[in-house]
Length: 159
Image (tube, rainbow, N blue to C red; front, side, top):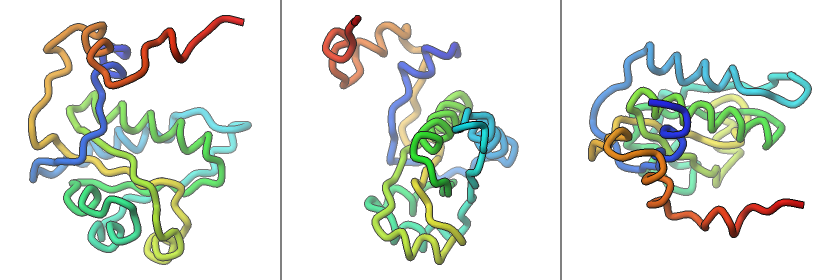
């Protein structure tokens, strides 16, 4: 799918099929995060693939979202802007592979840090969708029109 269709059709998803994500897809997701731009090209992030999703679930605001995912990645990084760039890259790369995702806020950063060896800025959950979705089922403009977002005219202007 083209980049705009991927962006327009991507939705955060919290319900996952009981199906593992192949290692090569996990690697592409991680590599997409690595390829994100970072402040002054410091790249001082760490992407932690967390195997104990049940324990990690207890540290986020929406535990079931992490507990039922096939993959959970915690991003440790001091700069929120860089975290956002890596996060979006990972989620879009996943969607390009048919894998849905959702960002999760960290409710107990100290407990999460004890679990993964660093304080996560965000936790991402990934899995194949419980209900299959086909991004090519409609044009990108239609996905955009149906998005639950403010109209472009309300959020953009020229100065």
